[in-house]
Amino acid sequence: MAAYTNDVAGKKDGNSIHARRFVAYLVLILVTFICLFWFYILFINATRSNSELSTGFRPTPSSHFFENWTNLKEGTLPIFTGMINSLVIAVLTAGLATYFSTMTAYAIHAYEFKLKNAMFTFILMIMMIPTQVTVLGFLQLIGNIGLDNNPAALIVPAVASPAVFFYMKQYMDSTLPLSLIEAARIDGSGEFRTFNQIVLPLMKPAIAVQAIFSFVSSWNNYFTPALVLHDDAKKTLPILIAQLRSADFLKFDMGQVYMMIAFSIFPVILVYLVLSRYIVGGVTLGGVKG
Amino acid sequence: MNKKSKVVRYNKWGYIFLIPFIVIFLVFQMIPLASTIYNSFFENYRAGLKQIGPNFVGLQNYVTIISNGDLPTYFKNTMIMWVMGFIPQILLSLLLGAWFTDPSLRLKFQTFFKTVIYLPNLIMASAFAMLFFTLFADSGPINSILLQLGVVKEAFKFMSNEWSVRGLVATMNCLMWFGNTTILLMAGMLGIDPSLFEAAQVDGATANQIFYKITLPLLKPILIYVMITSLIGGIQMFDVPQILTNGTGDPMRSSMTLIMYLNKHLYSKNYGLGGALSVFLFIITGILSLVVYKFTNSKEK
Image (cartoon, rainbow over all chains, first blue to last red; front, side):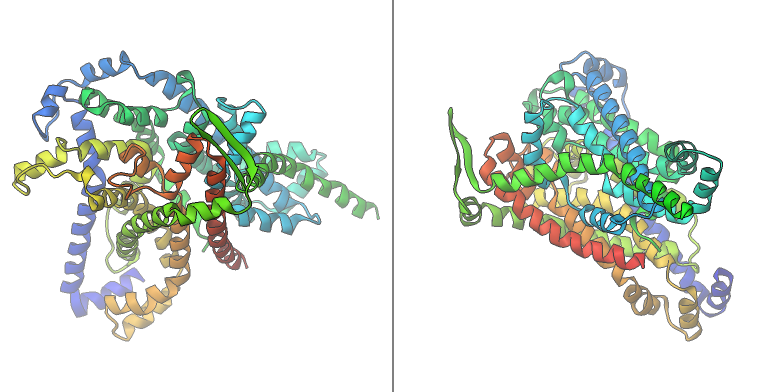
């Protein structure tokens, strides 16, 4: 197809193809610039001292990176506790969401039972309903059962993640043959063992993609954690960012503010640089089918 | 007979494996939904130190949030900012998607470009908003650059102008989501039968004609899907305007969104009005979800 098109294009309007390609690259470079520009300023400004920052913008880095880092580290915001809290919640959320969504998808995929189709339809229908609309009742509930101010209230609900379930179901439809499960049964493997030792390893690629997405969305989540967690020692990074915003801004050391923002987004950028291929590929698999 | 009973014995495992999902869903989503709806019919708030209610007031809460103008205003704000972000986003995504999938262009470094445009989607929205707040502050780097270039004579107060605050929110939403949309649209474009393009080229159609007459009409289902899921996301808009305006929605509450308004009621523990607002949001997102469900389901078959 590509070669064929090029033949026609090459004879007829080679110039127009070159012109279009030139425009395309120009726009793409511009878009790349717009995407990265903000992070460039962020990292440049994180290397500059408060007094340098107040004199106006310079495009070159300065030498106060470690000074800003030390000041932030020893400052009033509990950034390390915040990072550990964010990390623990995000890892456990990703673990529960992927394990139990795979299990739910397996139930629908591998077994024939009366409510199977009804259940599948139901999960698809509730998939898009945002958590915000039930958060009022959720807060009352966790208050009643003693989970208020407890990170478990943010982790345990991940067991029911319809969107992760849907992705797992799609993946199973294309890669998990029922004959394999049949074979395991003939070999005398119990159903639960089959799931854990045969199905889960086969689902590894899908689990990896969804674990990354669950991790990132939990790491970035601000709305629910801000309503659930009240103690300083339990707060996650987005809550600390919000505190930074509501503090008296002019009294702040701006070098520290930039350092704090960089500190919160740096882990995700790092993960992304290593795993971007899987992440970008995963978007398509999950979002639209064919 | 023996075989059949075995199948039945296995199939009970279908139910067993569904237990965790169902239990957690009922406890953490169904019960909260029911009690949110229940709350919406009661007057229940604090006035100073005094607790008012809960007293049954019927539909009074719904009447209040609509008639005092709060709900219509914040709904309008949310929609304006969504549209301002969505239109450039979908146009840019269509353009980039068409270029990436056009075999005659044969663009190089595609992986690099896709990696870059998807990056903002993964950035913590609250940190991104905080970054924009510092960058666009009166004495921030953007004003500094504009002054140095001589574009403006004195610092432009981005945070004091209704349209510049809305514009910043829309810009951030657009930046965060156009990469995701591009990748979804590309999947749709790659799904179109290539022989259609070949036939059109043989007939002498230009790249523009092919895009408008073939790609766009065949892409309509995916475009609608993208638009509705984006609309559902837009209704949930919270982190960016909340952090950017420190929860005030200033200037003059012109960037206050529906969820920011809900958040306010949750903090002040006004469960009656908060409940009515939640039910309103539930109905809108519920209707939109049904549309998405229809799309997902028709593709299933």
